[in-house]
Length: 271
Image 1 (cartoon, rainbow, N blue to C red):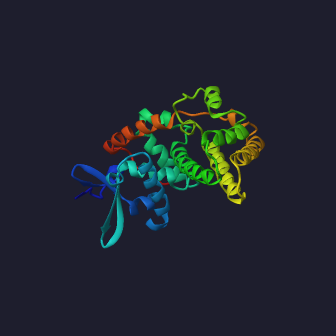
Image 2: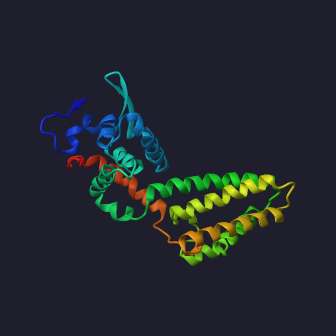
Image 3: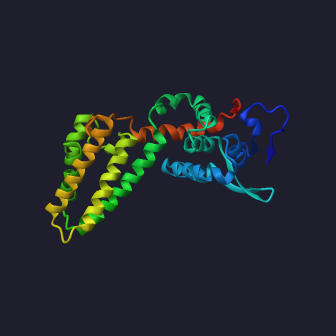
């Protein structure tokens, strides 16, 4: 393991360690750079970054390597891991905002794609929505729902005043794609809330029929619709759509390789 000399440190790489032609940074050092009191206080952001890495389909062990330094537990981070952590850290800290800009400067090809896309939060919420839909499907079966597509569309009709197929056509989303791959965080969260309330409502119903379960789903959808209109000034179907998550994911996978190779860049400066 080669440790970069400490004298005249002015570049990000100057604080790295080198192993088998790869560069890493200690998480304990990075915590201090981002204005955290200790590595343990940064760990929630690191855990979120690890989850984002897995959701991207990028090998976790290639970017986050748990180890010990001077008998203390630490983590060796690639530059891409540092980038993910910066996007999960406390955005109220000026240094965290500068860190995000620092890494995006090295991602010339995708920085424009990521701009205003809130990509990492979108992929996290979209993943939650997928899991919630699976749970709702199981709950619906317990409520005697046999036609889950009909049951689901009733919820969409209540929330969007459109069926899923009508909604995709209206928004220009290909029929073979998931709508969750194109919508923003507020809308994703609203759908998660719709499912959460529907699950609770179905759980309270005594021996419901498929028609009753679908009707309750529609009612909750209308309530979410009103909340969105009240708080955004727009109906759900009028909310903006974004670049496809899968396309952004492919670009970010490529960016991981690009970012980990671009190490000779200026230091993230504290002010």
